Length: 66
Image (tube, rainbow, N blue to C red; front, side):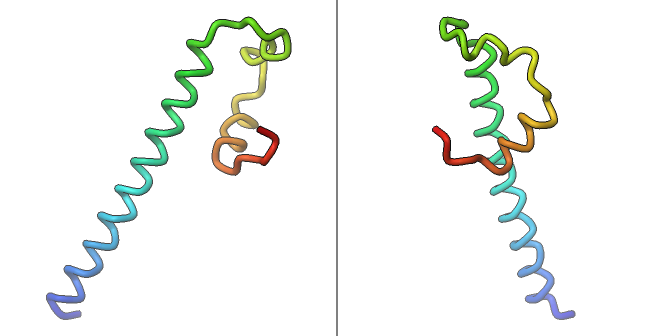
């Protein structure tokens, strides 16, 4: 593998890691908003009792119900 190819691979890895960092930052921001949001809506009162695995799954693959 030539030096140029190695640099290209490193560049690809860096770009992918930056994309993942941005997505994780967005998820953290959304979760913080949910946790810090006052519970005024009775439908949202059950948020604290929801399954964290399902919430993480929905965060990764959001549905169009919003």
